[in-house]
Length: 386
Image (cartoon, rainbow, N blue to C red; front, side, top):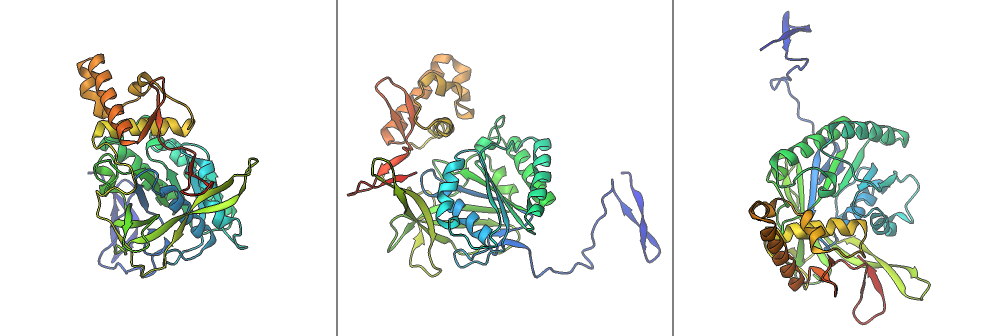
């Protein structure tokens, strides 16, 4: 091992360094009581977090709600918030994030920090791109006179275009780059992700995601009185602070006006419950809502493909061949056997998902993700945008 000698001395002895790095002393370490936070007890500055949950359960609404409260510096769910600039990289649905933030930001007070949304995908595997984005983020933060920053990456899958979320190597590279981004900017970098079909209590993909991040937030449906449209954000992991109590949100429609046909339009709005609610989170693994998702890895992979395709054009239908060509690791065994084996495996997964109501099929045998733009509310003509 090569070492060099630092010019500083203690007791007339040179302090050794290794490749420019100098160790820090545990003998003289002083506890920092005031840890820099974005949301106290939830998101610390300079760390990497992940917020994982099922589709169509309010994850985007809650993300937008948190980001809006951070920009305004307003307490959320009983937790203090440090006013911080927000950069939201929305690869999946940039306009949808702005719609979900609108109920909070339309009357934001003077002095609110910037809450900016990027309609793009940031390649979290590309070290040079992340370094360049970090330089931009610092300039953005400083331009607006803020001392702290929240960066949200939405979603993981669309932010690793050449990677496999089931690969420890690929996901490890993403987390390393996120850690470097957090360290260089002082931001909390929050990655939005999905949970697995079989286990709603953990992020989908490699266990390296859970092992290497600082904070893991997961979503669970609520149980108890007033549980309708209510969900919990559960602190599944906190590396540097004690895990706090679950935070309850209600997903309500926020009316914005009438369209040219006279129909009332509303957007989903995440409203935090006051602390001490009688609600309790359901146990991980329970499914909320009226649909039951087909429970196997192949079906989950097909959902991923159709979800990604719907992000480009929600109304477009896709044939089985297009879907098959975009499938990933769960279909590797069938792909190695033969093209017919792959075709049959994809068809079985599509049939299971269609039967479960997770995807739609038209008369021509084409498919799309079952996430309609508008869903009629019971007993009214109101349409709620998902």
